[in-house]
Length: 302
Image (tube, rainbow, N blue to C red):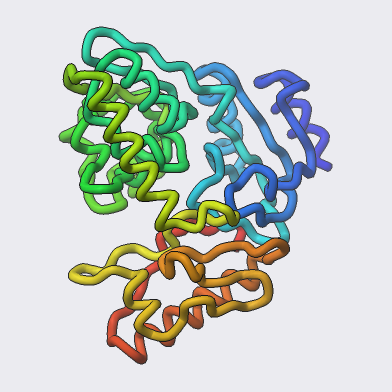
């Protein structure tokens, strides 16, 4: 163990918030992944800033982790510093028709806060299994809604570890992309602007979308969510199904029989098995349809 680095991390975030050789599988929705050299859970913006500055100045690999959705972690883990912004960094504040939330706030909690305040527009995100930080990076969307529809501004750490607030029009929000992703910014918090709406209507829409997810998605198995991006003019799940790959497996990694757009972990899948399965899916879909699928799932340590 790098004792000097450990001491410096502890001095920034507190010894109780720094773990060594922490297995990452329990921290990601795929339930796959080896240990991180260091796993840090800061509680304050200044701590996040100092942690990232320390890593950058000393050329130490680092990665920001939310609740671990949309992520495949290497079986060897991560040789560097994981900075987790989740339950430790999830304050939500409602003022009028605006909601300000820290990066670690889950989309579900924000949707609940909007419901409680009688604010509509975030129903689409209630079932997205991630945090606001990840949603801002990838312009998360579902069921006809996207974050860019309600996003007003985002506060980030830029490439020089300076705190900046960017307006929505500066973010270059597109399908699963943003300037945040392109430049490697770290999301600290974001402001959403919603509209007054009857809570009963909000609740009904959230229940409707929940039913759609439950009936169509393999929520009873660990996964990283949708595995492939939606090709223009197509649906990834249908292309995979039409290629005869429903239920196709490599070890315990499997194309879901319920929704072919999901790769699931049937119990003890490894990252290597998921990678091999994804390569085979891409190859076979290309052969059968001429369409090249692109992974939507992020990869760490691979």
